[in-house]
Image 1 (cartoon, helix red, strand yellow):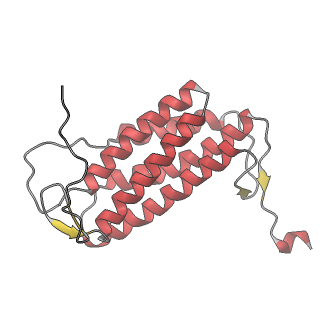
Image 2 (image 1 turned 120 degrees about the vertical axis):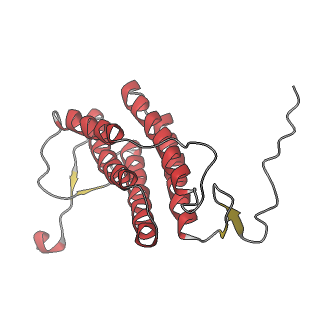
Image 3 (image 1 turned 90 degrees about the vertical axis):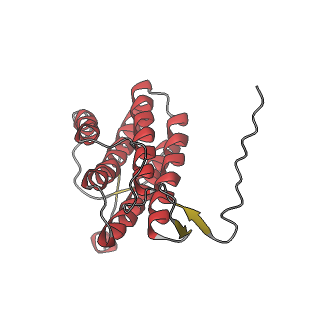
Amino acid sequence: MENNWKIYTKTGDKGETSLIGGTRVPKYHERIEAYGTLDELNSFVGYLRDQLTDEHQREVLLRVQENLFTAESLLATDPGKELSRVLPRLTEGDVLELEDEMDAMNLHLPALSSFILPGGHKLVSLCHVCRTICRRGERCVIKLAVDTEVDEILIKYINRLSDYLFVLARDVAYGHEIPDMPWKPDVLRK
């Protein structure tokens, strides 16, 4: 079977793109920035998933990637247009899954007594890269929500996801027998 579908459309050559619903917006639009940042996060989560050997962590991150695609599609939709198809939605269950995963990891992790520095192992660092991109995505989504309606569960999910990525970084470090690296501000070192 021949594939004649082309990835390029040439419709964005003048700096605009289409939202789901057909509205054209500049590529620097806050909506594009929000879902573009989540797309960047999704790519890094995929890279992290490919590096992990723990099958359960890989399965959770695959669901995270699916949920990020859902979030991206919701953000890419023109809120003023009636759609001819139903888009997937995030649910409270998606948020609860992340909370349950964090609770399970925290059962064996040492208590935190200070801020910790990212690093100690390439996988730990990669978890923190994902976490910080997620936080940037959250800021973009919240900025978008100032001027337009954004599903509250989407904001909640992205917030919880950054928390999950932080705990995952600690869990990965723990699994590699790497202790947390506490931040020691100058005032405490003198």
